[in-house]
Image (spheres, rainbow, N blue to C red):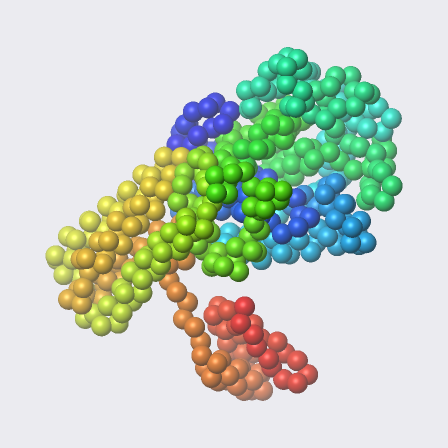
Amino acid sequence: MKVYNTQSKRKEEFVPLVPGKVSMYVCGPTVYNYIHIGNARPMIVFDTVRRYMEHKGYEVNFVSNFTDVDDKIIAKANEEGVTSKEISERYIAECKKDMEGMNVKPATTHPLATQEIDGMIEMISTLMEKGYAYNVNGTVYFRTRKFSEYGKLSHKNLDDLRAGNRSLLVTGEDQKEDPLDFVLWKPKKEGEPYWESPWSDGRPGWHIECSVMSKKYLGEEIDIHAGGEDLIFPHHENEIAQSECCNGKVFARYWLHNAFLNIDNRKMSKSLGNFFTVREISEKYDLQVLRFFMLSAHYRSPLNFSAELMESSKNALERIKNAVSNLGYLLDAAAAGDMTEAEQAELANVNAFEAKFDEAMDDDFNTADAIAAIFELVKYANSSVNSGNTKAFVQNVRDEIIKLCDILGLIAEEKEELLDEEIEKLIEERQAARKAKNFARADEIRNQLLEKGITLLDTREGVKWKRA
């Protein structure tokens, strides 16, 4: 398997630190509002990378944080007259709903920045002891020039940053030793949440958060660090500086970054009126369509979002679902029994599609070509599988399509919709089971309904239900 490493600017053979295991950190969103479709791209892309790694047999420790203390969160809290905690908790819950809609698997750990403050204070203290950081009136800065390899990820030269391009400078104040030094800890302002530290009552800088959470949940050296390409500089560059100076080890072996998402060939922005949240998209489309759209291009290619492309993705996904549905009908009608010799020979064709799929994904997760392999399999199923085939053969082809789609996080099999009267009957059966103290059966029915998107509510007036 080859992955493109931003740091080396080339594809490299993927070799994990520990055979059979992968440690992966993906920068998560800052939670002050509903996530937008720009946030959705790395979520979907790196969830797919994780799924493919798992398909290859790796045990993946996948960590993705929520930044739950930030200027934007504080501004939103002040605007609404509530606490920052209320804002962050509300939008973490909403983000998780959107992630579920996009079929993004929950991370192994979703750490919150505010719960890791002690670790941040500890790392900052270590950096100060080693001479990499200094305190000025309660603000702690990192000595950027003291880390000789600064710029190795973004391929930016410190002197060029200093001389020619002030827009790239990390925000500076006069009190810094060098304008390129960045903040590790800052004193509180009026009305802001704060924590006690040896330097001042305040809060951490953004960059230190990810260094600490990655170290705590994955270790001092990790396999993969990923995120959007907008994070390469300064965020990921600063993470490398902090982590490597503190721990004395290479921080991450492979750096993966997805390219930007444009809207109708323009950068997404509120001022242009082309800003879309995932929630808004969900009102027009099943979020599986958004996922398909995101995977229809290579993750390192800029992607253009438009109504036409979403319609095209919707139709393409429908073709896959229809093929699986048709195979379901054929399966019901097919003759039982073992595969014929001819069918066993034909299986080689079916397996060839999976080999093509794997070949695409092994080449830096080329989901566009992987989807093309699925469509070749769909075309084969539509033209070559018929009522004359055995159950075993039809099942094999159907399972293959579902499996390959599942690796991409695409749901190819439509869930059966339960009719209202069927739901009521199951609820009655559950009530009877509870009366008979058969709680195992009662739980089984609740879970069965939950899988079909039906939530049960036990109220004083009896059991009520609603569709998710």
